[in-house]
Image 1 (cartoon, rainbow, N blue to C red):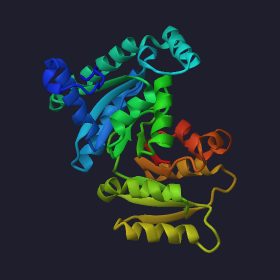
Image 2: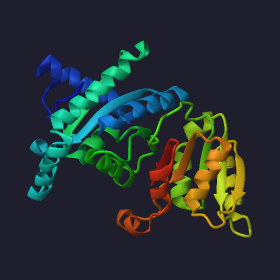
Image 3: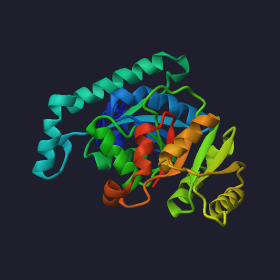
Length: 298
C-alpha cells in the first residue's frame, strides 16, 4: 500500500518500502478503472462494481484510498480547523484509512483471484490526492454520499477532473452492471460528453436503451440520439416518453425499473457547481433515489 508522498528523490536511494509504494501508485494511476475509496461504508460495493466494469472491457482495475489530512495540508487555518473537528465524528485520518483497509482486506479474502490487488493511499490535500490517483483513469467508481472525504472527492471528480464517474446505489449491488444500460438523453453537450466517455462500456453492454423524456414536437431528441449512437458505432433502442405530472427524474427511474435497467448513464449537472446548488434538480434527485449504479460525467 502506498502511504508515502512523492518528494522527487532518486528512487534507487530510497528504502525498499518507499520504492514499493511508488510502484503501487504508478500501477494505480495507469489503471483503466479505479475504485476510489474515501469511506469504508461504501468501499465493498465500489470494489465489486469496479471489478465488473474493468473485466467488461478487458481493462485493469486498481483501488485507492484518499483522505484529507490537516497535518499534511497547506490550507487556510479555517479549513484545517474544520478538518480537525471531523475527528470527533469520523475518526482521525489514520483511523479512517484503517477502516478502509479492513474492508479491502476482507473483500480480497472473499475471492482468491483478488489476492494480487493492492491498495494505494493518498492523504493530505484531498483535491491533489484525487488528481494524483485518478487523472489518467477512464472510469472512477466512487460514492457521492458518506463522510466528508466522499462528498468532496465526488465534487472534485465531476467538476474539477471532469471524469466519467460510476456511483454505486445506496442499497445492494446485484451484479451485471452492463446487462442493460439506460441512457437519459437530452441534446446538450454534457449528455453527449457522457456517452462519448462511456463508449467502451456501451459497446460491450448486453443491451442499451436511450430514453428521451418530453421530446420536442419535431422529435429532435430522438433524432439527435439516434445520430450520435450511429456515429459512435453503437447499437441501442431509442424510446420517448412523457413525464406527465411527474418530475423528469422520477419518470426516468420509473422507466428504469419497468425495463430492468442495471445502470443509468446521464450527463451530470448541466450548470456549474454553484448554480447546481440552486438549479440542479434532476441529477440530485437521481443521486438520492437511484437503486441502480449511476454513471455520469459533467
